[in-house]
Length: 105
Length: 496
Image 1 (cartoon, each protein chain N blue to C red):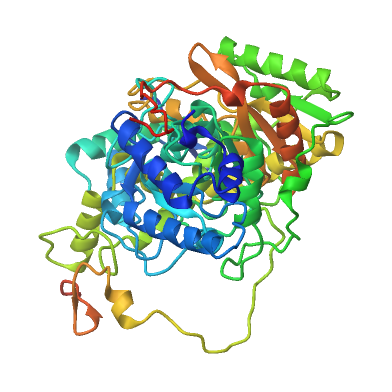
Image 2 (cartoon, rainbow over the protein chains, first blue to last red):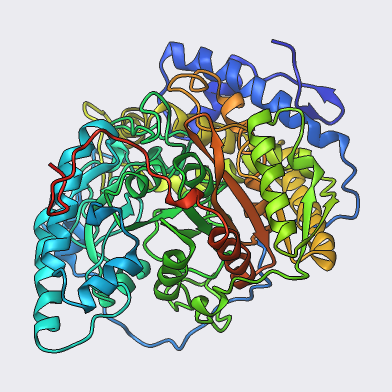
């Protein structure tokens, strides 16, 4: 598959190791066939997205949000929160009012 | 005629006249679901007991002499990414297969308070990512007009259910066309409201700056009535806007004399199916005969909308879906040795291929060294696309286009090529990037398959969209056509 996606003027292609790195960042354990499939598909999608490079956006400010929104503040008053029992209702594993997970350290 | 084939307004009149009770109406829908669901598969779960209980409460109020409100006692369905307290909400994902929300979405709370009847939760592409509902973890939903075709997506269940009379109306969500494209494919009316008009509280997030909940209905009047119920400011959604919600039914007037309509030429490119182009051409003629002034116009950055959309939406998705870690709720992968392994296995086993693909793309677009080239660039392009619309709306009241370049396609036709599937969203994604409202309504057929007319409006000007759509509907018969699902109707109006 031919290239695309530009970085600092150099043509870069997403390699297998890029896919493995991104999968690690995304906390997705991928199978061999998935690594191959995503390497090919991400290249193809980013090749298409490279059309954006043709567009001059110097001096254009980015739009993160369409509305002219400001911080939304409220009075700092105590309001009821979800009871512990309900918060744990959907937990895959819970014990003594806590979420239980494999060892962390 | 089967009572389930009527509009919500007609059902309301029957309830007021006491010609039917809410329980009878609800039972008719349950019968209808039993009769056609084997063919259509619109629902993930049907809440028969809850629906009958709610209907009984409505009948008790009517028996006490109360006049039912406009949606009271009318059975509807909800896309399964809208949280319903105590009722399973799956997003059509293995990840949330057994998730029971401990809270209620604002839209469903408003519908419950209005006395509506909830028939159940409707199928969708997993986490609303897709254009065909083929990405559901559970099942394919079929297009009621041709069972070999997809219903569109991601709100395939909500659109198919309304088209097949399995719900009087439904709620969907639209991030890049997910209400409008399936509504068009299934021959029903679908509105994507202005960003901020309808609360997103309780909508399971896909791409937060683009997502919006909206109604799918059999006609324009029903659509406006549902908007009356669900729209308006909500303190629980910080992007909700206090815009002074009008009574949307006031815009249902049969008059578009002098209205200025622009047709962006970029939306009718070489890829447009000639049968779709023909339907649009005829629809334009009808609107001109009704007094509208129609001109061609240009939205010059349209070709950049799809790449910008897929970079922004996937970046937001990769962030939003980070919460599915197998700790607090949802699926947990087995056999893990430590926490990172557990999270990685949970996500590997709980997400389907399209969700993984979008998380990968979004993570890449946000990763160190690529942020400026992809995500920031896409946000700048978003500014240019919004500017295109601002300039067009200085000259035109509404813009008109097809909803999709083709009518509904066959199962498997595009599912092996993600990019081809993305490209079919060309007419709908610019609307989400600009945050403006848009409606689709039935405008003709390509063979047996419905073709939709897409009308785009100024921010918070749903009213003008309803006015144009209503005028078109009053002067055409396309919305009255029904798919033939081969179900006999008994003399009492119930499906056999």
